[in-house]
Length: 249
Image (cartoon, rainbow, N blue to C red; front, top):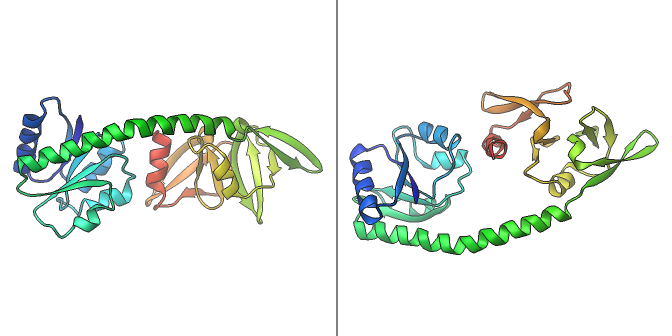
């Protein structure tokens, strides 16, 4: 089991590590992190662990700030000397809440709970992958669009991005051709593969292969699209963590 520890007290890290390895010598500690800042940086550049032990009060802020800025996809066991945060902790993938000093029997029960969940989700993930395959087969492959008085069929893989302008939705292909499409951006977002297309903002839905480069700007993310556009295309500060997860996956 690959475990991440987010804790700013060195003695607590040492004690937890020793207890974990005594319970299961096969446990691998991926990293020990001390702050919200360091945790976000690590999570954005590394695959997620099987489980994380997270202290609530870190050196620079509450660890809840991590989960407000990053979409966590793994279970969490919160560790703290206080019981004030139990209800709030369950908003963030928490499967257990251990009070310090951590007792070995409680730690063992938390690990057992994770293993039971893993057994349950093996079947769930198989079903999810199967359903995704079926869903992919059923997705739209082409759209009929309009250019002037003519109608044209455009393959989904040729779509660079879709956008709204004067309440009309346009599709631009990779060659730079611009078409009118009788769909809303929300309709297209629902129909297109969300691994390939991302809703950058209310106006733009973009193909990952049409993002030339991107950069941060005061929390927002600015996109340079191909073909180029004559306006700023920005992902909001609130949506920026979702974009980073999407483009990194």
